[in-house]
Image 1 (cartoon, rainbow, N blue to C red):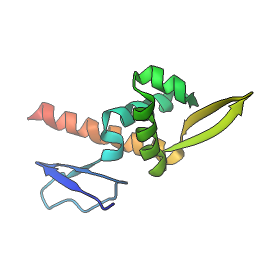
Image 2 (image 1 turned 90 degrees about the horizontal axis):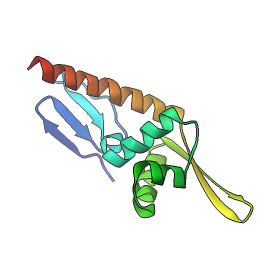
Image 3 (image 1 turned 90 degrees about the vertical axis):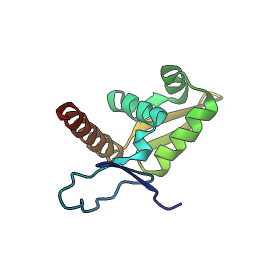
Image 4 (image 1 turned 180 degrees about the vertical axis):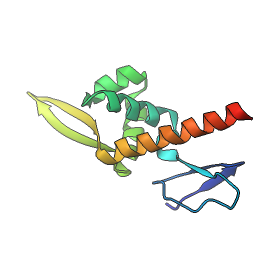
Length: 125
């Protein structure tokens, strides 16, 4: 799957891992990581940023989403290298836990900095 870019004024949203591209002259082009920008995935990453580890059921309850919805979005984050998924058994019960990776933390910090810039620009306008 290739990258897809949508240019909206000086804001560019890309799918897949964010890569630095040179900004157009006179433009403060900003790339938002669409893997994180999606509401549910942002919720997952934000929850993991303040909790060392969360189980599948903890995340499901916290975000108030279905099993299938959480599975799909968690897989996208895992494929991007932002979240680590560990599956184990507690007794005979399966347990799936999620942890934010160092790459995921950097991506979240970059995303938040970019959003702060967008908000500041909007307030100036």
